[in-house]
Structures are given as structure tokens and as C-alpha cells.
Length: 135
Length: 336
Ligand SMILES: Nc1nc2c(ncn2[C@@H]2O[C@H](COP(=O)(O)OP(=O)(O)OP(=O)(O)O)[C@@H](O)[C@H]2O)c(=O)[nH]1
Ligand SMILES: [Mg+2]
Image 1 (cartoon, each protein chain N blue to C red):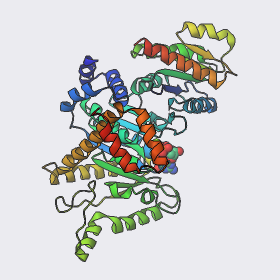
Image 2: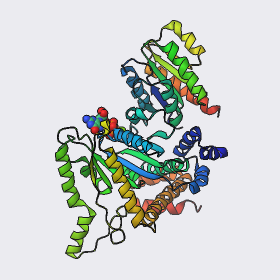
Image 3: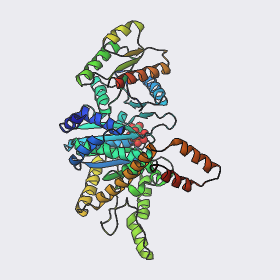
Image 4: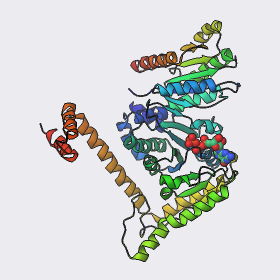
């Protein structure tokens, strides 16, 4: 089986990408190809990179607290770019009570602080396996 | 899958991205065959150099400048796969954020995946898919670390080798042996101390190492020497002396000069190689490579691994030498 391709993006205005880099490295060490695009990505930039790179999953790292506005917007822009079949997962500082809203916005998984990288890795593997078996 | 080709030719970026994935997974032979007749229009620029020399920043600046000239630009950014995990971090897009939002640009990152033979083939096929999609300029960025990267860059029409000051005493390209493949040399980070030394060192190396001066040496000593196939065959094409361009990629300084140098090289080839000697040689090499890969894959597919294991064990015990083992592997299978 080929290596899953994952886009790790940092939307929003906060200037910290340490967490995103830790995840990127962990996923690389788990055998994935991680496209890392750096800070302050707009929804349009994320959709564009996801399309050009033909990724299996988009992972968003959000620490700014703006996830409830950013994430639905990114899902929308990706859907409009014919990327409705590409799942989004979200990590960062996401309060438990916001999880449902994010899931309702079409997110495949939410990982709050303290999630182990193994958990995220396994979740992505399962997502990719489900995608490929659906054609 | 058949209409992917149609969609690509009609301009679909999604189809382009999908096809590249199929190519990478060795699953696009039919599509590549259909697309081949649509290729041969784009100019392919290879950009290579030591890690951190500013290749991605340069590609970013170059692409912007080509867009200003109304050229559509596709970029292939190659990064190494980790030999330990098989994964990779592909981070070249970080330096190319200026290019977002422009449909005349398409960026694709590619991991080396440890298959050195296949990598050059995949790069060539990526280039062809992008060429068929109508891009005027295709830029291939690779880290200049060794022979495999040199092979990738050899798929380009014009190869740009990037140096930067302060990356050690020696010029990195000389160590890696990639100076020989340069059609254009760039001293990037010219805003940094040491740039003029790097420039001088490069010029000296060029005078010593360039085929033009080698040729004179050879003639001088009356010896006949076969040139490497990657070097423009002397005696058939006038030699090209690589110009050296100073740039500050992050400030778009020197980029117009770089574009001019690439254009001059392109013109040099187009004027002097009307019969397509260079492309014929490149095709010959590509056919050899594909032949090797195909023969090996076919052999592997019909090879009994237990026989292979037995032979390995016999070679280890000094009962059989490796070349004789190969002879046995070839004769004993496919005929039974
Ligand atoms: N001062 C200065 N810094 C530059 C210049 N060009 C690039 N840089 C910086 O050099 C660093 C590396 O630049 P990249 O463009 O990522 O270099 P690269 O060769 O693509 O790096 P790898 O792909 O990792 O091998 C970045 O911090 C850039 O901002 C330049 O002309 N001057
Ligand atoms: Mg780079």
C-alpha cells in the first residue's frame, strides 16, 4: 500500500506552528508523506494545496480559538473546489463543547490537547483505508 | 479513468492532480501513452543545489517573473523520503505562498520514495503530464546531494545550479559533482557576506572544469577521450559556457537576469541543435532506463523467491560466486 499523503495546514492568524510541526514529524515517522505549507493559510490556499497535491486527508492545526469560524469555511471552500471527498481532521486547542459543532460542519475527527500522535496516526490510516475501499 | 485524459486536456486541475498520483503509483501507462502526442511544447528548467541554498525561494521568484511574461508555470518540488520510515516532509510550498490563488500556476510536491531508478522516470512522466496540460514552463526543484538528483535534473532542458555563500569552505556543487551539469549558475543570497568569494571561486572552477577547457586540454595532449553522454557532444554543438547570475531570491533581485540566462540557453540549443541531437540522446538514455526497469520487474514477477534465497545462502557460504548466481537466476527461470 502506498504512503498516505496528508496536508498539514495552519489556518488563522496565530503565529505558532510548533504543534503542527510535531504532528508533521510524527506522521512522517509513521511512514506518511506530509505536505507542510507553513503559517497563516487562508481557506483558499488550503483548498488549492489539497487539490494540487491530491492529498488523502487535510489536517488543520488551530490554536487561535477561531476554529468555529475557520473550519466550516474551509470545508465549504474545499467542497466548492470538488474536494468534498477529502476528509478534514482538526487538532489544537479545541474545547470539548465545540466538538459537536465541528463534527456537524463535516469534520471527520477532532483531536484536543493531550491526544497522542499514535491516535492521530491510526485515525488517518483508518480514514485512508475507508477512502480507498470506497473507490 | 479514460476521461481523466480528456478532462486534463480541457484544463481540469483536479484531473491533472489525479493523474500525477496515478503516475506516482505506476498506474497510468495508458493515460501516458494517450498524452504523449500532446507533449514537447514546455521548456523544462531544473533547479538544484545544496539544502537551504534558496532553491524554493528562487523558484517562487522565477515563477512570479514568468507569470508577468504571461507564461503558465508548473512546479515539481522533490524532497527526500526518510530511509527509516518511508515517510517524508514536503515543505517547499512554504516558500511559494506568493504563488497561491493564481490558476496559471500548479505546484506538486514529490517524495523520492527510495526508488532511485524509478524516480527519474516518475519525474519525466510528471513533466509530460504537465506539458500536456498546457504549461509553458515546468520547473523541477531537487536537492543536489548526489547522483540520483543529478539524474532527475537531467530530465530538464536547462539546469540551474544554485550556490549560496557561507555554506562551508568548499563549493557544495563541486563536492556533489553537479557543477558539470549546470547550464546556468546562480549565486543566491548575494545580500550575505562572502557572496563575492563564492562568485570568484565558482568562476575559477568553471574555467578549470568546463568541457570547453577540458576539450582544449585533450586536444593539446593529442588524446581521444569519450565525453559523458550528458554533456553536449563537442564537435557537434558549439559549447555553452554557463553564465553566473547573482540573485537575492527573497527580494526578487537578479531574477530578470536569470530569466535572460535561461532564455539564452534555450536559444542556444534551439539554434544549434536543429536536428535534435540532445533530445535523441535523452530519449536513448530514457529507453535504456525503462528497459532496465521493465526487464527487472518482469524477471522479479516470475522469480521464485525460495530459489533466490538458496542462491544467496550459497554465495554467502562461498560455494558460488555472485555472477554465477545471476547466470543461474536467469537460466533457471522463465524456461521451466
Ligand atoms: N538572505 C537571504 N536569504 C535567503 C535568500 N533566498 C532564500 N533565503 C532564505 O534561506 C532559507 C532557505 O530557503 P529555501 O528557499 O527554503 O531553500 P531551499 O534550497 O529550497 O531549501 P531545501 O528545499 O530545504 O533544500 C530561508 O530561510 C529563506 O528565506 C536570499 O537571497 N537571501
Ligand atoms: Mg526547497
